[in-house]
Image (cartoon, rainbow, N blue to C red; front, top):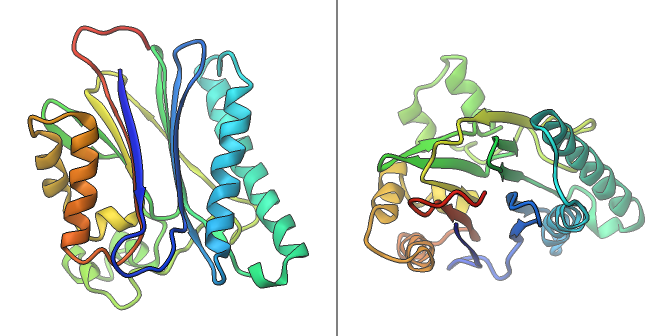
Length: 248
């Protein structure tokens, strides 16, 4: 198994409000997570850090996540606890009112692959030289697309494209989507919208197909996002399954 994650401030923002991690436990279970914070006075940075630090601390305590249903319940509990932590923080810090964060995560074991998502960060799987988007963004524009009120082409340049309908710290209770995905994959890619707003799925796919190391691929995706404007922070967590390996 090859893993790599990287975050970049981008070309426009003066600080980075994203947080990202990849962890592996003693049972060879992997978790990848990306959080994209929002809020003024660096409050978004606090919110995303709360999410990733909470996941890191609790996952690190586990020898195993257990059966699939146990992992699903763990994801839901993490989202609920992170949501509560953010609301508690804002009670004691007036400057952080309105802060929140997206969260996309993937849990990969020899028996199951689960994605969890709230907000507009994205989760993909890579299989047979094709990139497949697993998650759906919780945005006003995506809601309009799904209801048939606007087309996907109209959504690309919609003035309310970045309005979130769900995020940790913004909704109580927190509703996180969970996706049960086939484990027969070649790779997993998670990203904040700093990547997906700059590059199309096809452009991302092309980089993943290149004859490069996982580190070079992730770095190239961030570099291309910056070349195209880098209007937001860019964070990526990537896992590639090595051919012939069965150590998950």
